[in-house]
Image: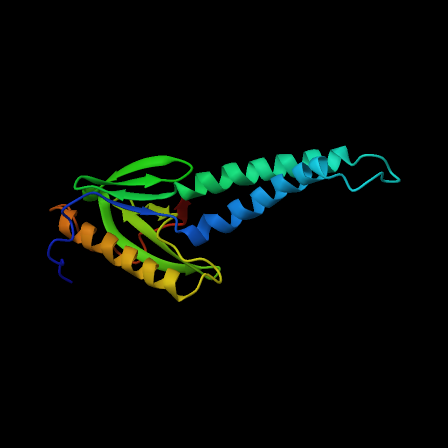
Length: 175
């Protein structure tokens, strides 16, 4: 495998595509709009009294959905000449010299990427990944990002690299 020319010149950011967070944001905004619309244009007297607990539940769930979609939007990796900066629930900086392989795998219908470290630990990346029913465009973007990550690793892995044994990796470590 060879390194493409000019692939590793600047910092590259791989983030969650819009199809990964936009549907959640839209549904959360709809959940926020339902009680607001009910307060602005009341449906009239209801036999059971006001449905205030339902309105509060929609507001809470909608607010949580907005926050979660904005958090998911920031998931990904930053590729720098020194390291892979993993941006997930936990932030983690993994130097290229510790990475022994970049492997792709399929789990529950989703294509994912994991970094195999010197110790045999696997660091599962949230991005790049595909999504259920997201279509061919997301699959192409996944393949491009996976290739870009592999090219960066080949260009920066350093002299400590050695082939990974098949029995070395353990269970994936979620990031």
